[in-house]
Image (tube, rainbow over all chains, first blue to last red):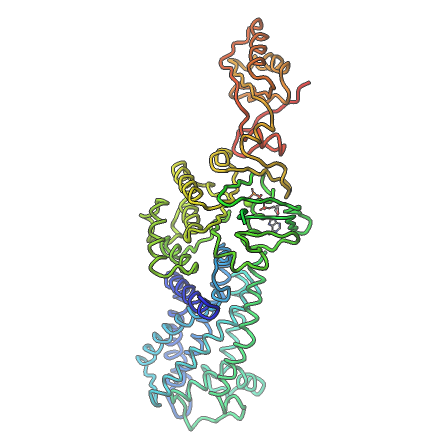
Amino acid sequence: MNALTMPVADGWTIARRNALKIRRSPDLLGSAIMFPIVFVLMFAYVFGSVIEVPGMSYREFLLPGIFVQAVVMGAQITGYTLTLDLQKGIFDRFRSLPMAPSAVLIGQTVADVLMNLASLVVMAVMGLIVGWRVHTSPQEAVLGFGLLLLFAYAFSWFTATVALGLRTPESFNNVATMVSFPLMFVSNAYLDSSKLPTPLRVVAEWNPASTFTQAVRELFGNTSDAMTTSDAWPMRHAVPASLLWIAVMLIVFVPLATRLYKKAVSG
Amino acid sequence: MSDAITAEGLVKTYGEVTALDGLSFTVPRGTVLALLGPNGAGKTTTVRVLTTLLRPDAGRATVAGCDVVADARRLRSFIGVSGQYAAVDEHLTGAENLEMIGRLYHLGAARSRARARELLERFGLTDAADRPVKGYSGGMRRRIDLAGALVADPPVLFLDEPSTGLDPRARAALWDTISELVAGGSTLLLTTQYMEEADRLADQIMVVDHGRAIARGTADELKDRVGGNRIELTVTDAAEMDTAREALAWVAVGAVQAEPESLQLTVPVTDGPEALRQVLGRLAGTGVRVRDAGMRRPTLDDVYLTLTGHQAPGTDEQVQEATR
Ligand SMILES: Nc1ncnc2c1ncn2[C@@H]1O[C@H](COP(=O)(O)OP(=O)(O)OP(=O)(O)O)[C@@H](O)[C@H]1O
Ligand SMILES: [Mg+2]
């Protein structure tokens, strides 16, 4: 096996292992699939009866935001699993085997994307049940899901970096909660962010969660001409801005997570 | 290359603690070296350095001709490792764990699967093969981890306390497996706390303490080094212990060990038969009722005790007294 095929083959072996792990951990499955379902129902029926967005149904507006939220939460499985593995001896086993060291993180992040795919399918079905529809072409719809999965993959590397820096499941969970709540709530995921007071509005417009939500809304056609469009650059060019975010996350966090992994397991 | 493992002046420190203090040794290909030593002696640290899990602070080492630092990747394809603590995935079944290891050795899917089944059978885990390891007992976990070390039939094996936690039957099965492997040309470095295990499996035994080798040789050589014979005497009543001790002190060349519960006294001597005759002669008129008297070669327990000054783990606490 050569230097190119080995990380791929080993990465796939590890990905299969992680997929099995996720399938057998009710708590992980719960947070990645049950949570978004509860959120769809809660927002659609509770907020949906109060919040109005101009020119469209709130549920159609909401679903792209919930997709992004599911990705943000689902990608945390990577970080959480890594902290659990760090406390067991399994990395010693991996490090004594003639495998590509990079396969551990590649496998973990790939498994997480598969998990996210499953979770997106569940949510899309939930969405269709509560009245969400795609109004664009099938190609654009596929691009929308593709963008979400790319985001999931890149964001997994971010959670891996945080996890390998913190190293314990408890501290990882604390930080993950502290980061993901503001990320999702100070954004346009659940609300029309143009109605927020100025400082919050600016934060929301530049928040990557808003960028991804806006991009997905455009690709699924869940937008309305009646809504005030923001002047902020990422909101006006949401799809390219999302791709830029993905590239930046990968460029920064892949090497960083790799370095932190080496540090965390040697010793 | 006739040495499968070489270590030269290995040093590893953890802050104040010196885990390895210039340890050097070689293991010829196709032989078994047992590392023996008290807790904290540096056995696990040695295994971790040789299996590329830990970089030494100084010194160098090779396994199967590969340097542990510079050539770590290639080295790993020649070794099988079972560490002191089982390194298995809890959520995977026994079979899945072994199959994954096979794939990561690049054996291919079909061979990995076949090999997993073979090893599960050999380690008596066929019934548990398809249950997640999470539900395994301690000894079962240990066995699946040992099986993991053997997946690729590696030429050099490292087993850190392989039989800790195994029941007698599993231990016997493990020893048979190891003997077969070594007969087939594999090299083994094992650490152990069981003298019997070292005696039974090892060609050479190295006693380690404070990160240094303090003795090395075959079991017989080490026993000779500790000297001569042991006389063991059992009396009938606790009140007789002191008299018996006095009689033994006449012939002793080292400390008299007394075990009050079993009413037994042990003493090292040079000329066993002559010493035994003398002791029994001295006791003849004293009224001490000797229940059992005998002579034996030193055991590895004696070697361990004499060389490290620690009690061998796993033996009953004994009272030792200096004589003369
Ligand atoms: N990660 C670590 N951090 C700090 N000290 C360590 C670490 N690992 C080992 N040590 C120290 O190094 C010394 C040797 O430890 P090692 O685990 O090699 O002993 P051992 O011979 O395997 O003992 P045991 O029989 O208990 O398994 C001990 O004093 C131990 O406290
Ligand atoms: Mg140890």
